[in-house]
Image (tube, rainbow, N blue to C red; front, side, top):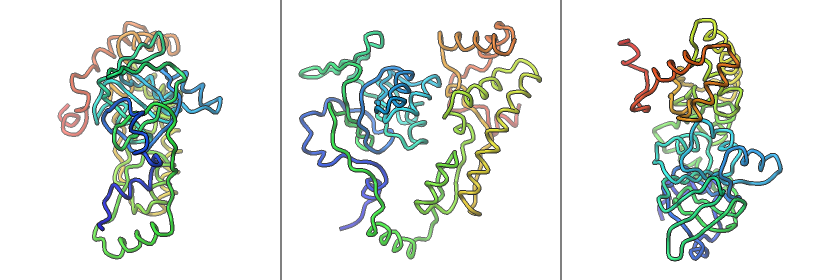
Amino acid sequence: QMVQPEHLEQLLHPQFENVADFKNVKIAQGLPASPGAAVGQLVFDPVTAEKYREQGMKAILCRAETSPEDVGGMHAAEGILTQRGGMTSHAAVIARGWGKTCVVGVSALTIDEEAKSLLIAGTPPVALREGDFVSLDGSTGHVYHGQLPLCPPKMSPEMKLFMQWVDDLRQLGVHANADTPQDARVARDHGATGIGLVRTEHMFFATEERIRAVRRMILSTDEIMRAQALASILTFQREDFEGIFKAMDGYPVTIRLLDPPMHEFLPVDEELDSLLRSMSEETGAPLRALRAKAEGLRESNPMLGFRGCRLGIC
């Protein structure tokens, strides 16, 4: 029998044991945005997800859709579940970059953030509240009620032998996407012979301190404010690049220069206004100037960005 790529993928991520036995507790279907399996208690805001982790509890962060304001909770959660979004949505892209289980685009889902509850349309409908357990299968997009048993990933001797056979026959090398030293170490442990892309903007999602430095750079209203933000960014990037190069130990690393997509770093509507007020108090920059800068950076298609030929032309 042929070994399929998805067979190998099952060995690299946690999976559910005997998932066929739990068809009766499947409650929703979404898009499989990031592979693996995750079990945890429902939470509806990033702050609660971070509190759960601090208390040694496992959370599944459920949002209508995620924004840059959610990255702390996304990082703390075991998995991410969203009502809206596709395979290139904010939640999907960030989760895949971190190797975190994610299911997006669950259209049957209705979230009441104030009541901290959700309703899944069906026959019968399913109502869940914060603290209820759910299980996500990021490889299929299935959502289950309750705690399904997990099988952790493992690199067995048989797997290592099989990959040695592959190495003897393959004509292509594998370069990984890796944005942090930890990503680079995992890539080498799994046999990558280089990094095909370091997305430098992804270095800044892990902590609030890092994401604020990029926001200060994006919204800087004068050269002094920009230089201060860039100095902070330099410290973070120098530390990360040293770790990445050490992990790759001479293998090639391709770096994409810093190109922060606005929609991944700046929130919208009331959250954006709150951010601008906070930044005005922190930096002394006039609130009106910050609002004008944010409005001037608004993009109708954020995925195009301000890079490549567009940057060169300007």
